[in-house]
Image (cartoon, rainbow, N blue to C red; front, side, top):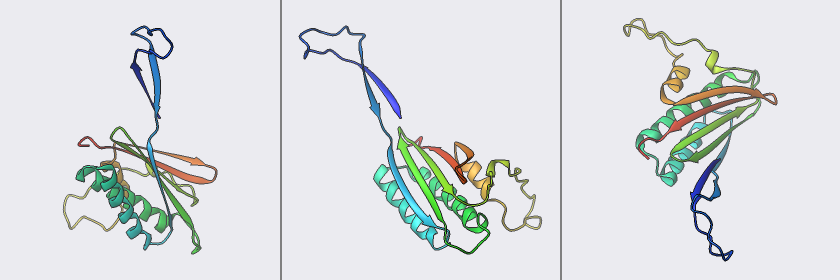
Length: 167
C-alpha cells in the first residue's frame, strides 16, 4: 500500500485550506491470484496467466520474461521437491502490482525449504565440466530485484520482487 499526499484547496467548507494542508489518499496495488496443483501440466496454466497479466498490466517484454522464468523455475522446484507423497497439493501464486513493481508470493505446504540458504552456484568453465540441473535458484536470484523467504503457518512463503523499469 502506498500513501500519496497532495495539497488541495477545500471550498466545500466555506473556507480555504492552507496551501500546505494535505489530503491523504491511499493507493492499493492491483492484486491477482492463481492456485495451481503440484503437477508439471500446471506450468502451461502459469505461462498463460503470466501472459494475460503482462498484457493487462502493459509490462515490458523484459519484465514479462523475468516473471515467466522466475515463476516457472520456482514452481517447478516446488512440484519436484516440496512433497514426500504423490497426493495433490496446492501452490498459491499471489501477485501485487503497484508503481511498476510486481511483488509475488509463492505459498506451498511442502516441507520447509529456504531457497536463499541454498549455496551459490559455481558456474563451470566449459561444457565438459557442466552438469545437468541445479541452476533454478541461481536463475531466480539473477532475474529478480529482491527476494525473501519465511515459514508461516506450516507453509513456505517465497517472495519475489521485480521492478518494471521500462513500464
